Structures are given as structure tokens and as C-alpha cells.
Amino acid sequence: MNSVKGWDWDHALQTTHGRWTEVAEELFPFVNLLAKGKLKTVYDLGCGVGRHTVFLAQQGFDVTASDVSLSAVRKTREWLANEKTNANVVELDMLTWPFDSGTFDAIIAYNVVYHAMRNEVEQVLEQAFRVLTLNGVMLVTFKSSLDSDYGEGNRLDRATYAPVAGVEKGIPHYYVDEEEIRRLLQNFELIKLIHKQELPVLEGEGRKRAHWVAWVKKTF
Image (tube, rainbow, N blue to C red; front, side):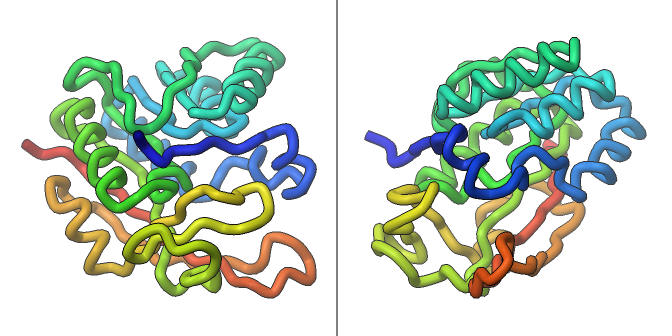
């Protein structure tokens, strides 16, 4: 039994004021990298309501997207239809990879892989390596151990906690430092690693968010 759980996106969009409908700033330079390398097939892992899926499809990429949440799949498909663009959107948890080896030129895994136990995060990254083409690239983010939420909620495992309230209630968060990221990504060539500290999402919210953003490449 795995620990992967999905959001209720109908509820989440009401409580986060549209945050999850905006394209993350890191995606723009990453798309430039894809264009420069003539990389066309992209997998958006944990697509949420479709902010990156729609953007990538509009840029002419061949996009496959997945999410464990049925509401996410529904909303992504609706958004694509409204924009009159296409992508293959399927319901999958992130431990399920029904794709042949070397299927994708690129993977976007934005704010998703750390929603699991440590051994499951390792499994996800192993599968990502498998389905990438040679010289394929991935943009992946991790929750930083410097985040204010580190140590809060129910402890599930080493450096792994689940909130006890809110839209992420019961969903695992695996927190990492730079040493652990380098271990997790040891099979990849590390292109770029950034530690990103963010202001509170909601006005008056005291906690500070911190993530790691990594660009990696499959070179063997």
C-alpha cells in the first residue's frame, strides 16, 4: 500500500486564491532549454488543475499529464478544452508509470515528488530516469528542511510529516537538505540547483515556504 494521496482541487482553489493556476516562474527558462534542445515530448507529473499542462501544450509540446486526483484530471481537461488545445491527461498516482523506457524527452515534477515517504520518492525518481530519453531533462522540486512547516504535524517517518488540517491534511511531506537531494538525484547529471525561499501565500500567514528546484539530465 502506498501513501500517495490527492487534493480536493475544488476546495483547494477556493482557499489559495488562484495560486495554482499561475505558471511557475521556473518553467519559462526550462521551456527555453527544451526548445533549444529540440525536445518535444513532455510528462507533467502531478499536473494539478493544469497550469503547466496547458502552457506546454500551447507552446507546441506533445504533453502527457497525470494526477492522482480525479478533480485535477477533470479541471485540466476542462481548461484544455476551453483553450482549444490538446494533451493526454490520465488519472495515475505518481508510483504508477505505465510508460515504456525512453518515452519522454522531459519531465515536469513541480511540487509533487515530496508528497510521499522517502522510499517512495526514490521509486518515483527511478521511474523518471527510466522513462526519459537519453539526454532527456527533468525539472523537479523538493520541500526544504528550512521550511517553517518542517517538524509540524504528524510524524510519519524520518523527515516526513503530514499536516493535521487544511487542504493537505494527511498528505506526507518529505523534507530534504542539499546533501539528500544530491543523493536522490545521483543517477542524473545535475544542471542547476536553487534554494528558493518564498513569502507567505496568504496575507497574515506566519509560516515561510522553502523549496529546492533542480534541473537534471539523463546522460547514460
